[in-house]
Image (cartoon, rainbow, N blue to C red):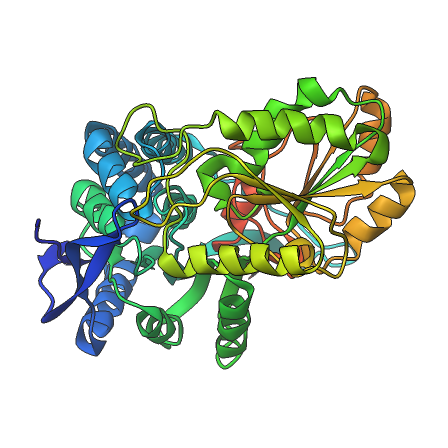
Length: 472
């Protein structure tokens, strides 16, 4: 087993204790990660604070851009190594983890060239000629980036790149289920930055809590569960830390009666089941006109049955395991509950006996009130909900407390846009789902989060406005 270390102040720091990391394809421990203690957390924050306050990092935009560019190049050179680690600790097929690393490098490269917009200077306020007024942007300071296990590298880099471009420094805490790829990332790209600019500490929830509550941390950027988001929100109130929270989703897809079931089935399938459904904005409830229900079910079930489920290190694998045993048990319990409520279970294909696998599964005969419909299952199970009135279906969709993404599927684009604009969601799609643009922000409404990542809105979340008056 390889030895992994914390990354603090530009150095590899060994921890006194470690914790096991499980390969979800086998259910067996395959490595151990360093457990950051209170001393290590304090050292990481202190290193980030020194790098922010005593170096030229926050004032030298050209150097920051050069560092981001160098980091992108270094990450591209380690694509296969990091991709294999993601697959081993998270489970996703290697073809997709390679794409994740390539995408992370592209985000770093994009931010290396992204303009830093400044508000234009105002020579004088209306009715006041006594002072010149300038609106300027300043970095916040030390940022805590706390990331989940489902897409560990991308969901760190979408925080890291804008935070660093804006002149902040970062201490990252990856999920305890997928720490190795982030620790390796720090080893690979760390030398691109001055010491202390990018630090990584690993461990369970108490590490994240200690980091987020540290008085020197000025912003928390978090992706994860609603429960943890609430806790961070409450803790941040003590010293008014800035927050960006991307939380859970229960994304609906609304099929209109003019859609072609055969034509949309492939996109719907992957919109729901990519990464074995472990995506915040995956399709998690599918509203289908009663007249199309059986045909769309048949098309989706046919796709599920031919899907290759297995170890993500096998090149032919399309769906890997669930990342944790607990997540698989949750999915199993939701399906068992659905069956008790009269739901009909349609499972596709076979799965390996070892590991945390679950077959792509479709469930019919449910509606609002069933946990599988109302809650975020975060697994390869999709309920199909038949409807006869599209307006009533839309009302049911919007009654859910989540509001991350939603999609509508139709042959009439203009009608689709009218529905898309009425979804209570931060992301809205017509005839696609999970599509993202690097220059566009993403974020959630209601329980699905606060603030945005990506685009100029995401960048501005790492800067604060300062109004400067100069007497004439």
